[in-house]
Length: 116
Image (cartoon, rainbow, N blue to C red):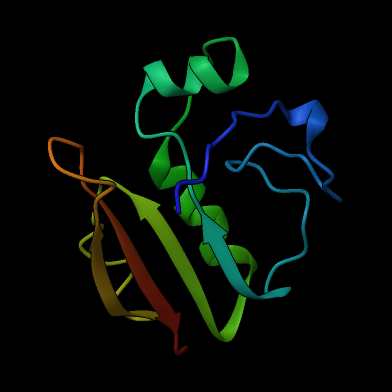
């Protein structure tokens, strides 16, 4: 069964919080899981937001590390596989490759768990 995907705007989403992933307005250690699917390139960022902004996957990961609770998970869907998130606090649980078909770019789901 084929499902047709539709790109939606931020205004169309029914969300509680819309914020810059690099500066989250959230308390530290407040979530058991953080799911991240950031833009893979500046070109995609402009396509989603309609404008170019400074974006760093590493700053976004730093914020995810800040808001995830002890024992919680950070799940990242991206073309980048981070080597580690800080060996003293996080361990990689899994890395899973994902493709939508032949001749398509591959993405990976990387899962980290906070243990300290």
